[in-house]
Amino acid sequence: MKYDLIIVGAGPAGIFTAIELLKLRSEKKILMIEKGQSVEKRHCPKIKTQRCMHCKPYCHITTGFSGAGAFSDGKLSLSYEVGGDLPQLLGEDFVQETINYTDEIYLEFGADKHIEGIADPEAVKEIRKRAIQAGLKLVDCPIRHLGTEKAQQLYLAIEKYLIKSGVEIKFGYECNDLVIKNEKCCGVLATAPDGTQLEYTAEEVVVATGRRGANWLEKICTEHGVEHVPGTVDIGVRVEVRNEIIEKVNEVLYESKLIGYPKPFKNKVRTFCQNPGGFVSQENYDNDLAVVNGHSYKEIKSNNTNLAILVSHNFNVPFNQPIAYAQKVGELTNMLGAGHILVQRFGDILDGKRTWQKELSRSNLKPTLPDAVAGDITAALPYRAMVNIINFIQAMDHVVPGFASTETLLYSPELKFYSNRVKMDENLNTSIAGLHCLGDSSGWTRGLMMASVMGVVMGRKLAEKE
Image (cartoon, rainbow, N blue to C red; front, side, top):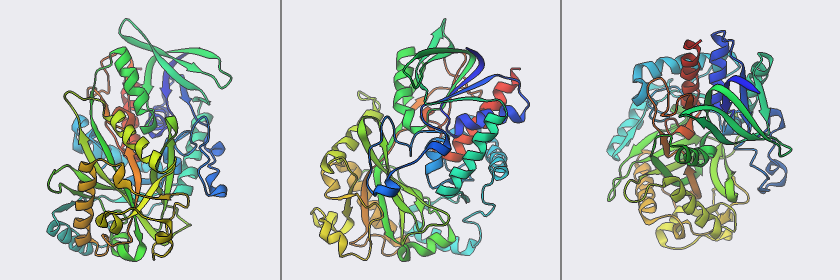
């Protein structure tokens, strides 16, 4: 079972590595190993049950072909300023050029041609002025919105293209370890759906396991001596407001990317993944960790808009396990919610009280996550993070009047697992020959587009070796 290239993980980074190799007419024999299922077999029962069923052995929203991308809101950020630190490694101009190239590939597979956030520059100026007055920075970023249901259709088309073009994809196979001999990666060890242990060998191995696989990759790096450093971990909440509160920003920008450094701690705090007319959702990670997220469909709309507010934490000495730290925060929050996502009104946080279910039912704002449990998120989130979030929301109120109203909802925990950063050079080589780590699990990217861009670059680098 020998291949030229093994790709671990069928998320955007792995997918676009294979696409670019095919476009360059590579003759490499490619194997893609994916723990989850194909797009057409990924189904979340919550659509019918209205409650998370904690599916085993994994959550279909986070695992499977295209990773969380096929079941997310499907937004492509078209600026190098958004999506992680890849421009630091490869250069801003080059990354922007590659974003433009990658965007064309998405269009080829059916992405919506409309771009959000560029139609009314004068209105953008007004929003930026209010942001400056509030001590926040507005990051201009054109957005191509796929939509949750349209993203699934697009990635299904890509899946069929790869298989038709000769890429072998093994669904339901879990990579357990890397095979490293004489400081060179020469394959992987995997478990088949029936439990059989298998070894696959290859000249090159690409690990692209996404945010869900960040913790696993960190362990692999530690065990095999792959050079890596602790990165930033994001801990925060998912905020939900009525569309009427934020409709101007939705119309002009679609997604408001705001950054601030509120007193007294001056940590970086930012908005992320805004979903106009969207729905708050739940994702499940290993050890039954329930994490909140948000989706936005093209055709189905709610009366609410949700977005994440994330606080960046950095740890160096003596503690250097940021992923484990975030997991503990999530576990404590889940404990208070009896295994469910917690939700609390902003006004109740300021009043120092928990939220009760009857109070949610009286509000203008109805939660779009039906099985979220009303409670007290301040009993679980660290003081530093909570103070940052409160101060940032109050600053946001100057940009979006009413954002800090009593009935604004905060869901917890919102965690981003991409804090392990693998050391790589500009050719995407790690300290182990033949091993390359891409996408969000590598710590270099955040989101669909930048992970896809990293895959394109990897495809080109591998093709140059033929």
